Length: 93
Image (cartoon, rainbow, N blue to C red; front, side, top):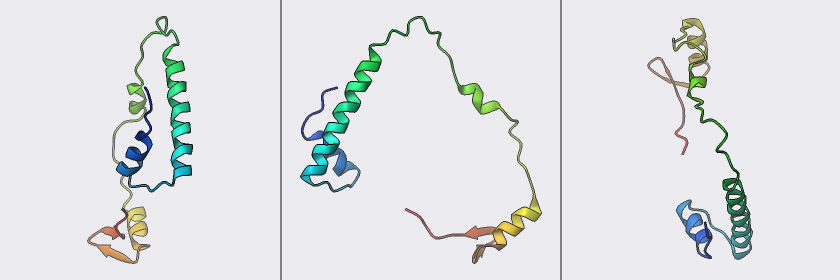
């Protein structure tokens, strides 16, 4: 992938980050290094490596809920505000 001069400023605008000229240049160089590394990795011959799936890792334990009412009550009781049987917390954005 070719990194164009305005790509860094477009990325910064999309993520709502303000960059000065020095920071933009620094990130441009870092992105160029990253793209060169990815390009280098894509040249590695992996044809002899069998395809695998790591989806089996999600099934290491049975999907059964653990219910501990006493612990739940204790944890909810530690919060200053409660709504029903739930702890009420400030919105985090």
